[in-house]
Length: 462
Image (cartoon, rainbow, N blue to C red; front, side, top):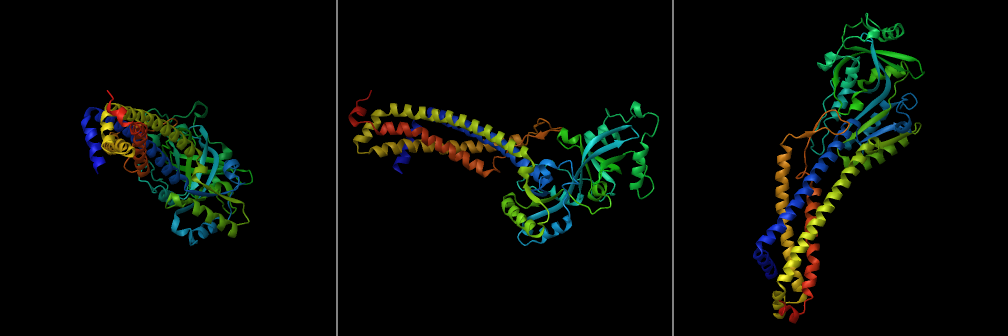
């Protein structure tokens, strides 16, 4: 207790120097926490976005992820309804699950032949109600940009496209943009330009009278036998998908419609079964159990289980980039704080050499001198950490309510600039612990040097 009081008095005796050192620590800790909170928001935000759209785990045909993205017929999963039922009733998996849903990905050509335009698209057949349930997942409480798919409760021939697809197909009523022209191209001017063969294929798919719909398009795809197949679709909405490359090819339609395009009258299949869990930490246990279940009950198919990190490599790349930036900035600030505090403590040792000699003459041992200077550094570290955390929380609050936004490279709309300081306890505890450790480390050498003074030499120091 006496050492603590003495250390506090020494700090107050040189208030200007102590305040300068304290300010350097506060600025350093605020910088680390603010950038760390920004990094944390990006990491948790991207994790949430990927899990909302691709789930935690996906069951796919072996090799589909690497080689089969454009070949759903060769990598389809048969008997998928029984597989989903087995997963949902498994006693170990059931408590972990939020959604298990099938999906079918296919490529094709979408055409608005009345306007004389067409383009290639990457379509996703899905169950809208289950996909909308997936979009509600938000384990880490981040700001979610996911919007429910408007396909729920619509006719089976309904479709949603990206705004880039809508613009290229001249579906201007969906975009409501002044710079979008729905006028037919010169090659198609003169009326209905739907090719006869495509019109004939489309009429075979229609079960009722022809629909008068300005947003009706034709979707051309290849069946499992390589023959062309066409579906007539009504586009009900154009969604901005965020990433322009995706926005220019995206199309979502009902799963039965997509299966009819690819498999016709054959038994329907899917290209993946998406599994979304309650918590991300459950991935290893769920993956192991899924692999055992598939091997035991569906061993006749070559299947594999992939997690969201394997399905979305950009997630790991983003994390590595943000981690390297955070490590570099933390190291830089740590070195600055280390030398600032070390310089302060070294100056104190020089100024108090006679005082150190007096204390040693009064019977204080070398360990006591060392403990006194380390105690001063610890008080400085704790005060700087406490004030730094308070300032960082205040700055985080101001940033989160400022409305600042930016558009990341490759994205087509802006994201809010947010920082997660109070919500990220590992970041908070790690930064505070690191700051106190740097403070003690910077004081250790001056304290060791002070403890080695000989009494006589210290007393006659001028």
